[in-house]
Length: 194
View 1 (cartoon, helix red, strand yellow):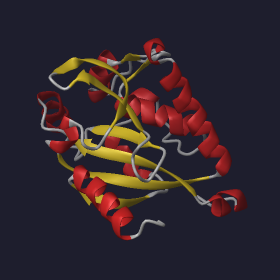
View 2: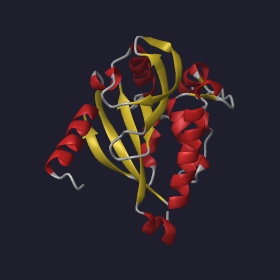
View 3: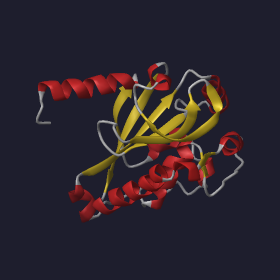
View 4: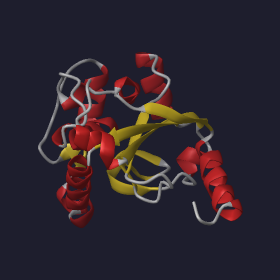
């Protein structure tokens, strides 16, 4: 896809964090889809301070989920398998639109619910979408698609985390995701101006 002058000069990026936890639900999704990654989150910054997704409200309960502000030192990331961080270039306008949409979710978290039914039916190539119901990759795709960043040409309920590897971004990190955070901290410690 050809970039516009605005996109090339903006220097803005967003990040899609892909992972697979050690939970039973993650194992089931992996077993059925054979995908390396079973969870997706959207970060608005390189330091992953603004990292959002739909996922389990409590780490021990896979059935009750919500919109949440995630951190790479959360239990599911710490005990999960290696993940990947995809850096995607966006225009200034696209970044503002993404920020606006995420802010809508963040300001009204109770207006949105976890789409467990959609997650299960999506695995079997069926769709169950509600205007205010999302699972992780459905949320990330909804935000990016609304901003014109990516269009897979399929219903948001059919998007799996693995598909974000097909965007016009590139992988900037692969491995245990908490290691990425340590690398970022070390970078600031040795190069405070970065």
